[in-house]
Length: 579
Image (cartoon, rainbow, N blue to C red; front, side, top):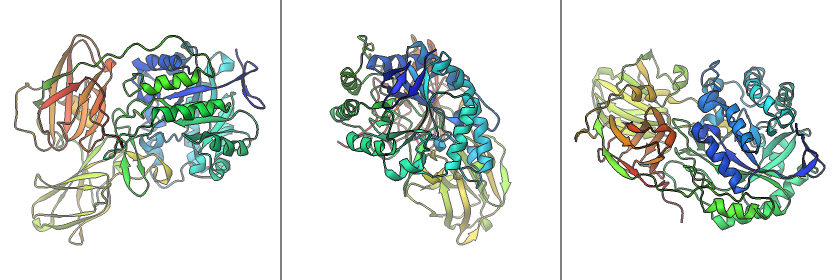
């Protein structure tokens, strides 16, 4: 057993001064069969610690349905860190931000109007049940019990959200009662207000920033007068959103900022060491006056790219770390290009009219009231007297395709602030609404999705709606593989399939530039969303999702394919940068 504590000026590991040199890997953004590889490469860069958030909504998407197996096996992830001879930092939230769907909070938790991230009794009851489950995994893996967990964080950048000290005190009390004995920390951006509001005197304050280290450390020291200084989110890159650019940071500048931190004697957690992927429908969104959903790739311009390959930043950071701590001689294996080839796509018919039960109500029913966790709801209503006219919505969240009698009329985008369009006369109005990602930051957590509020035609409210949830993963699983023949059926929502023969499992990069918008699956593994809106042009296919022999690709297209082929390319293409 080894002790880990906070001394007058340093972390103390087994009573000796210790510097934490950590990197973030989110187990929920990496295929579980690749966890060990990513952890090992962190050690090879010179890190001694791995940090991870815990995504509550990955573990308990529906109330009471807790899962800590397979891709959610946090215990196994922590055990692999220990097996590599490294320490671990756990940040269970319950709120994590992380550009992750709803900031990690389950939809069932945030539905309704109750206060979030507060000492509200009902909220505390729910998060207490969650944290106790997490701590059942974490507590026996603490360093003083033979494991390697050395720090646990309370909440996450709370000073940017609120200042409810009773809430923080309740989290601390619960954490200690659950058997967590290692030091407890908080993290906030280094401003006086955030550092004051986001912590307690009994918690060790750390900072989150990516530059101007000396200035930010000085602000942090003013609020944390004793103990080690730590930047527990050293931002070495940034995230991307649909319709933007791929964000990168200058390698030399990032390495110099890291050098400044370490030269000042600070501990660090590099955010991210390896970003990974927002597989499935797990991406979040930002909204600071304009709704911007996050792309599928969470590459983050990190030292390990989305596919787990070392970048120039990996070697630059390794050289900096070597000035302050031992670095292993071994290096990651050389990167080989992924196989490049194309296969024809076979049409498998329409899919957005898949049979499902509809809720019939006077007004459209939101995703939340349907308790729907997938990406799409189809709304149908009979037009009064077959009229056309000006269609006006209170709000569309987040993207809608409008059809009359099966003919597409136009789209409405939350990002564009669309709220109205004109429709021709007809019998049935159909609106297919896609939820593009729940906001993960600030006070829009938990907002409803779908058609929110009233829909009117020339000022008259439309009533008698049929709201049909569409589970894209279930629909993809039901698609039969068709013959690989050419087809002109390239317009409108359409399903496509292909069979891919491989000699052995391998990482691949699926080029989506010949398609418009939709979802892709390999052997049932949900790769995520694609969109010509960019910047991302590839979907990462992790090797463990593939197999020797025949592999099955299913594509669910929402608009139109430009060419009925699936192109696989040799490397990631994350899109244009600002340079």
